[in-house]
Length: 325
Image (cartoon, rainbow, N blue to C red; front, side, top):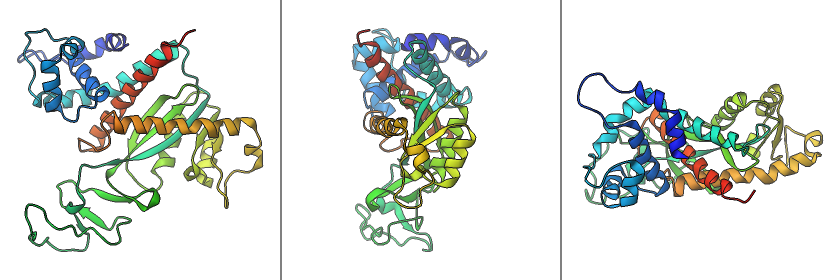
């Protein structure tokens, strides 16, 4: 499946090569290595190079011979710009989705939307109050005492890191140290494949705004499921303006949908199928390596999340295509 995807992207790879300088590493090999990193939960690019160095199967998949030298871990950093400029992750994702459609494993009628916070690799001890002045010298440089104790909700603290992180309140009042980004997924209800994905700023309305953008690109969508966070008048009106039925979970009080929507059998089915989207976020964070972000910047995070979603689709396709006809 990966060979077929990369073959379809070959014309795009050809345009990425420079006419001057030393021969560069083929983008196909870089993408294969990054795919291994997602599939086998390799936590860093340096460790990925070590894995490829001693694993014969990894060398075979990437396309390296037994005697070929292993790249430096900085290879990915140096080549990341050209991969970003060519929007390779989106093209790779679209090619995987095209495979699913060619195998008749993806419909274009019933979807589910949801989002998740993307947690930064930052310690609670790196946060302080916004109104505080310059930080005092730590009492213990090796293990400073944490001041991040009371009133942990909202945007009341920032990090002392060069790019500030934010504290966002999640379920059960648990605190997530997240970059100002959230990942959003449009899931096909038929077989649980990701139909579209994006990353936006982590605001209070980001989930609903991103969902409308993803649905606007979905052709002939009939219904869309979601949790109670989507049961607001603005989102329901926006979905109906796209001629899509909002099969979102109904609030006990102040719901934007009524019996005209919930009485249909399709509403119950949408509520049952919408839980499949949690499997996507679970796999991307536990296996795909997105439990804590390894990169900074909205554009780069969007690239990584899109590529990880493509890896998830490949895993699902492998399982679905192996089923007896």
